[in-house]
Image (cartoon, rainbow over all chains, first blue to last red; front, side, top):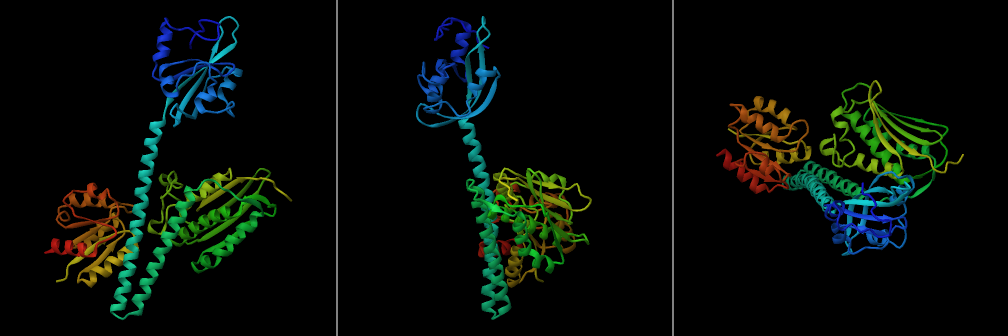
Amino acid sequence: MLKVIEKSSYFNFSTTFGAQLFKHMPSLAAVIDRDYRIVLSNNKFDDKFGESDGQLCYCVYKKYNSICKHCAAQKTFVDGKVRVMEEKGVDSRGMPTFYVVHFVPLFDDDTGQITHVVKMSYDVTEQLEKERLAAVGETVAIIAHAIKNILVGLQGGMYKLKSGHKKDSSDLVNKGWEIMDRNFSRVARLTKGLLMMSRKSTLARSKVSPNTIANNVYNLYKDAAEEAGITLETNFSDKCCSVELDVQGIHECLENLLSNAIDACKTSGTTDKTITIDTQLSDSELVFEIYDSAEKIPQELEAKLFEMFFSTKGANGSGLGLAVTRKIVMEHGGRLELDQTCKQGKVFRIAVPCLNMEN
Amino acid sequence: MDKKILVVEDETDIVEYMNDLLSDNGYIVDSASNGKQAFGKIKEYNPDLILLDIQMPEETGVELYRKMFRDKDMNTIPVIIVSGMSAANWAINSRVPVIDKPIDEAALLNQIENMLS
């Protein structure tokens, strides 16, 4: 920790070891006083943000006109605690810059008061950009792979259509159309899922009974479940009053979970094929649960379950359903969980905080 | 005698397509949906050629290829990789031909004919 050498507003560190160390250290460093004015900065800081002596720190770092909303320096001046924050600023060229900054208090030796805060930062802009590009590259490769497989499916459908016309076989023609229709739907689901993942949060909340949403989803799938020999039941809480939710978003979440449960039961080796849709409401939380009696998901796959493009359904899954569901639930401030503690089967649970409940 | 081709691919629509294309061109076709299943089928079916996808559940095409390579009865069976992964070109021995997805039918049929002649 630096010692205050002079009590004047501006330091003079020109000859001390500490001054040399400060001036030439590889991280960006600036010292601010209680008026948030920069009283000292090192070479690396000056290169990044330009000359700054006597200027307000939020002007120099972020080009703001007023103090940052949750200013960490302000808190450090009050409690003397060291803080580490990730910040986004604007450098002297006007370019966005990302840095990790340590806020360190400086105490007056005589009074013990905090007179200054040192902000020591390291620039992570380039590292973040590399990580972003790598992630983009990986995502694009995965999307391209998924699309290629769908294209081959479409090729197969077209081949069957042509064969059908050549051999004058309506059976082949119909099968060809079926394959093309199926793969067209895959493209549509993939596109919809990708758009959903890429959009910024735009929840359209309105007051709705959770049981109404759950019941609508039940009605959509009850015939398909029955056809597949699956018992689909509901267990709706009578305490569920209207709460504020994005109706379309929660509907999509329940559809994703229920459709996964039906697929799991269809391919399950268990004799019991049951799915239950549950709603529960407490003082603070609304919970939807989808239980299915199919085999549990292997533990080694649990961590990957909510990742984009991960699917246990092979070609029949876009790999986006659970990722989209988790996104919507998190936008509600809630959580999506897999619970496999039950004796048989598993539960996917959506828990969202209750906003503006009304009886 | 007609030549036998084993299609190792997890996507059912692609398996059906390969079955249609190859049987229309005089080949006898069987399929497996992952590397593990394929290994058993190779022993039982004794194909003349294998069309091999890379990205599959349970056991990938790379894992199967390596097992085949170590088996003295299997390592002479010609293999063509049919994959949407650009990494397929370097995941397996570079002498194994690779047909990219979406499939060029003429290129695939030519490759098969050359390898079986």
